[in-house]
Image (cartoon, rainbow, N blue to C red):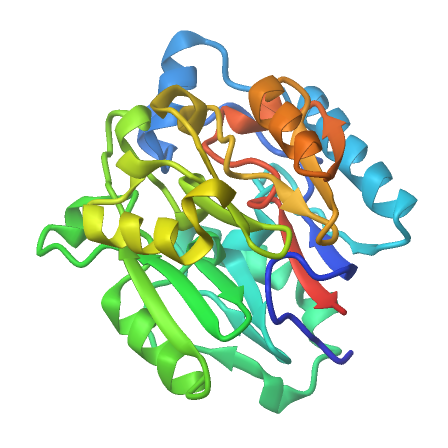
Length: 303
């Protein structure tokens, strides 16, 4: 398999889509990795397996409609395998296997049947000290945008998933790209004050546009850099509540076609005004785990 990912929006040809099959029982608060899941566990509104399976099948149908080759993980019994983006990601022709929370190692093994077809020298496992998840990593042509958290209290945040060592390692792997890192706001307890990954508060779309939430960034100067880079007229600013609902976590099939959650009315109307085709799907149950469309897809090949 010859991988090719240069950016977030070129025409998609092959992707790994996570699975909600045999997702397991509702976790305890202690087992949850993020504040939004904890909120729903406490409220008794944590998503049911059958509802999440229906949502993911709706995405699979859209991908197949556009002739995208869709791979799925091997199903591990009673195990959450929805968020395929966390565990690995592709930049250029390399797949980087993420160093993720130790509890999630089996997720990587469940996609081995896909990445085993990639030449061995193109399969990269970063050193143990490099923590990274794919939701924080965005190839964008000459740039690689990476969400991180470099505070001394990094170990205290279960929501801090990508560290400075990983940012430096990725820059070394891709010397011809400019790696631009962004400090994200983290909270273990308040999902409206937590940007779990960069794609929870920012995502480029089309050729030159972006969705962004200012408060997701710890440093205003880094948020302003992005607004300047894309141009204010090309940026769709989302509110704190819209970030909580995961408005920035849509998924591009091409520069013209975006999969979005069907309740994101304000965003979807704007996208259509900008000339995008919006494929609306139901994804509110999966959103309860602080992840949405980009989180559950891992592109392998784009034009």
